[in-house]
Image (cartoon, rainbow, N blue to C red; front, side):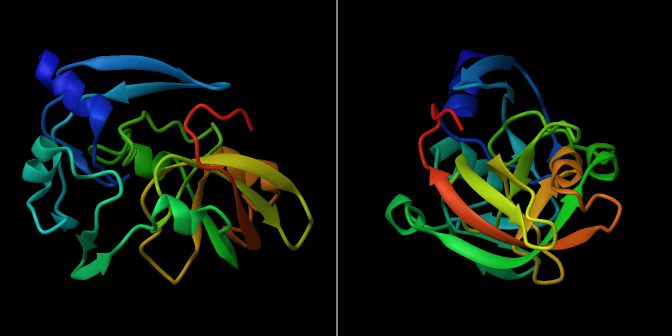
Length: 194
């Protein structure tokens, strides 16, 4: 059990639609002003084909998952290095995910191994290192918030970020489903206070 907990804290993989095969330990952690609940590995998913050329289970065992290349639906995604992400900004379409994701098997776990709570402020990104803090500005109403990116996605419709339902509400596009946004990395350190 200790080994599983260490794997969890060192490197964990999961997508919002992953299935949790076995959960053996839970750990609470406080990161800056964020309190997160981390769940032990291992994870598997029908969507995740490979991580860094390994099966998801083997990648977890080797601790090579947080920012390693991964394959979803036959497409390879290569996360940015910390250096590449330092001055990252992007404009595009944001969507949101909530209870419909949480109700799926394993939908309560993020790629960073944290508990997913739809009403809290968090986000998923395909390429940013995990975790990272990003300022998201809704370009339609100018509302802006800082979110903790702790998950992978979105994998549909060429969207640039998937926000929790709580974040979408704060940004004013919950009722619309999507919004045009600008993303700007504000901190790459896990202990940063947004």
